[in-house]
Length: 364
Image (cartoon, rainbow, N blue to C red; front, side, top):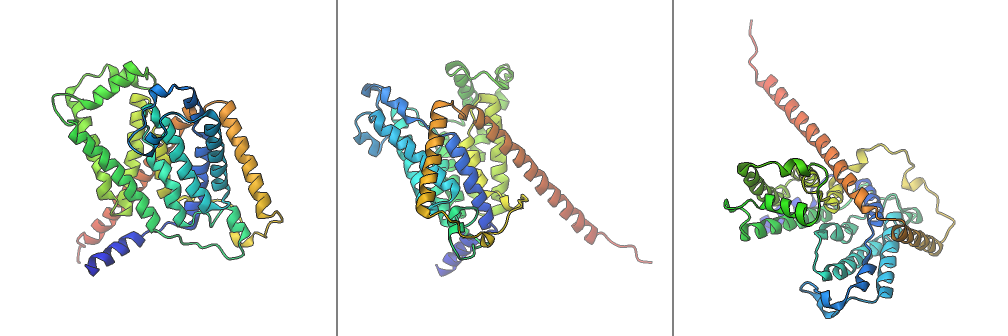
C-alpha cells in the first residue's frame, strides 16, 4: 500500500509549471471572466411558474430572487474578478469568484437551461493553491519576501483530473443514452436540432447540412465518446495531457464551425496547462519592485472601483461573449496546432537521431 501511495505522491507532485505560468493564466482568466460577466438580473422578470431548479440547494428558493439581490451578486462577482486579476487578496478573491459564479449560474440554470461551464467555474478555487498570486500581482509587490519561482504541482494535477472526470461523465451518459447505436446518428441529430430549433446557420453549417453520409456521421459519434474517455488516460502524463487538450481545442473549433457553439470556457480552462513563461515579457522581477505608497485599503477601494466600472461596462455597453467566444476558440485552435506541430517535429527529429545511431557503419 505504501508503494502505491509513494507512486501517487510522485505523480501528483510531478510537473514543470512555474509561478509565472500560473500568474499569467490568472490574469488571462480574470480578463475573460470580466468581459463575459453573466447577467442574472434578467431572471427577475421571469414568472415563478417557469422556475425549475436542478436537484440541489437552489430548489429551496421556490422562485427567482428580486432584481436587487441579483444586481448585488453581479456587482460582487465583478469586483471579485477584478481583485483576482490585480492579484489583491488573491486567495480570498479566487474562492469568492468560484462561489459567486456557482450562485449566479445556479439562479440562471433554474430556468431549465444548463450550460457546461463547471470547469471554468472551479478553476479559481483549485488553482489558488498554486500560489498564482505570488507573481504579477499587488500581493507580491506588498510583500517583502522574494516571490517563489516554483509552484506546487498537485493543484494543476487535481484540476486536470477534474476535467478528465467531467469528460468521462459526459461519455458515460452518451453510452447509457444509446449515443453509439447504429440505428441513429446522435451527432447529426444534435446538429440538425441546433440548425432548426436554435437557428444556428452560420460558419460551415450549410455545408454540413448537405453532407449525407451515415458512415461519417456514425464515426463522429464513436470518435466523440473515445475522445472524451481519452482524458482519463492522458491525465497520467503531462505530455499526453497537453496533446489531448490540444486535440480538444481542435474539437471545439469543429463544434464552432459545424454547430455555431463556442465552448470558450473549456478552452480558457485548458490554458492553465500552457507554459506561458516561454512568452518573452520585459519586466523587472518582483523583488525589484519597491513597496507602493498606497495602502492595502486604498488599493482595495481602487480595485472595487475598477470592478464597478467593469460591471457597468458589461451591463450597459453590450454583450462581448458573442464576439469573444469564437475568437477564444479560434486562438486556442491556433495554439493547439502550433503545439502539435512542435511535438511531431521533436518526435521526428528524435527518430532520425535514433536511426542515425543504429545505422551500421561501413568498416574499411
